[in-house]
Figure (cartoon, rainbow, N blue to C red):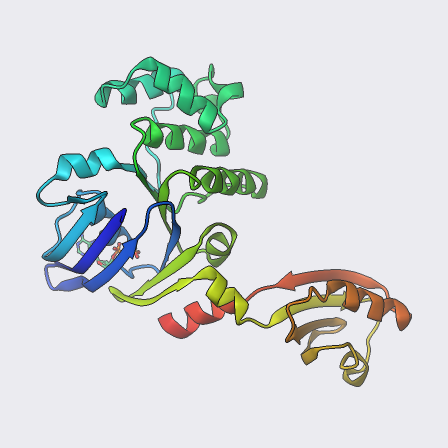
Amino acid sequence: MSIEALNISKIYGKQKALNKVNFSIQSGEIVGFLGPNGAGKSTMMKILTTYLKQNDGEVKVNGFDTLENPLEVKNSIGYLPEHNPLYLELYVKEYLSFHANIHKISNNRIEEVIKLVGLTPEKNKKINQLSKGYRQRVGFAAALLHDPEVLILDEPTTGLDPNQLAEIRKLIQEIGKTKTILLSTHIMQEVEAMCDRVIIINNGEIVADKNLNEILENQDQIIEVEFDLRIDKELILKIANIKIAQNINENTWQLKFNTKEDMRSKVFDFAQENGLKTLQLQQKNNNLEGLFKNLTN
Ligand code: ADP
């Protein structure tokens, strides 16, 4: 087991931030830690990284107790904080070598992590010359230098543009093949795109702990489509397997299907057969979002 949290409670003054939190994460899992602002995500992560001490309960990382063996815990964890503090004036290699010295790691490993996180083309630049996506890669490289078993990522894609976002998501999935990853976020799509499992926390308590497959399997398929003309609901309800059709504005419809078959081509065919042009067609997935709203409202 990579992470085990047993009955964790944390109180700041009178504010109870965590209340008897229990979860465990197996080696090799990518787990999304999802919750609204103030739910207790950062507090839990600070406890995992030994930065804070819990008032009650027990946490083990890679088999080491956070209170009894904080050094071993730190050695088992790579942590990427939300606002990754980079020294912008340093060169990439200088920055990584600064981190490598702290951990007493050889310079060979620097080249290894540079490759691992896809920093090779930018490795001779100063950090302030890098795009946000590449700066984030530098943060990953620093977190991975000591080859930790567990990686803890706090809102790892904040502030990235869509291209950078896709690249960083890919990188996280790649790293997740060999590491255990706990990823805190408030973005549902992030979890859907990358995680095997989601833990939802609200008001300091775990309110859901589920495999993504389980959540996605029980779902309706939702397609949003815009035609060039107005049509009657009766007509659109003729598409096979359709459950609900809702006219969300003018010529745009939200369609729910109860089938696993991808219905986008059927909707497209329907438009053609009825002399309509399809201006937009998008598959949506609101199951995790629905679950999240129900549990955290
Ligand atoms: P999240 O990361 O999910 O936004 P936090 O763990 O930061 O949530 O906060 C959980 C609760 O604890 C919130 O009510 C927050 O206001 C409170 N809290 C967090 N840090 C402190 C602190 N240092 N002192 C007092 N209260 C805090």
